[in-house]
Length: 216
Image (tube, rainbow, N blue to C red; front, side, top):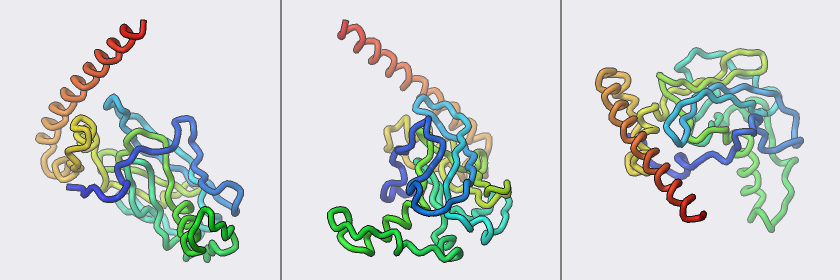
């Protein structure tokens, strides 16, 4: 069971036509990292996702290549995107102090503003309704040279995402252990969830049609 903590299951703020994740444009030199992942749409269909992450220059040089299943530079993947390890900033000597505005109308203290900056350097909203990251659908992150520097397989499976949506958030479980230990059971779960998703989509179509008729 994945605990519902904080905002890990919120929707992404990134638009589908926004493939470049740059939270602090033109603030410091960056290098382009590429994320390849899978995302489930609101209709329950899975599609490939791709995005470019603007990461502070120098991170590629201080990180090691990994294999799928090793997290590397990735701290977590969430429904909305990816979080990188804060240690990568220490490794390149990143100091947010020169970028502080000391704007007390926005931040109660310099420490609060520094935390905001560091968070925006390492947390990226990515396009997608519900980003998956499991052994079935791994999240992969490559540095500018094409080396795999991060992967994540310990977030929601396809079944977990479907269950969350068809129950309107009442069931929050990854189904990762089911996929790993009993594929037959996992497929049965998927069939049941797909039926529920199809029913939910039909109900949505009916409501949409009724709305159009009322507006005529």
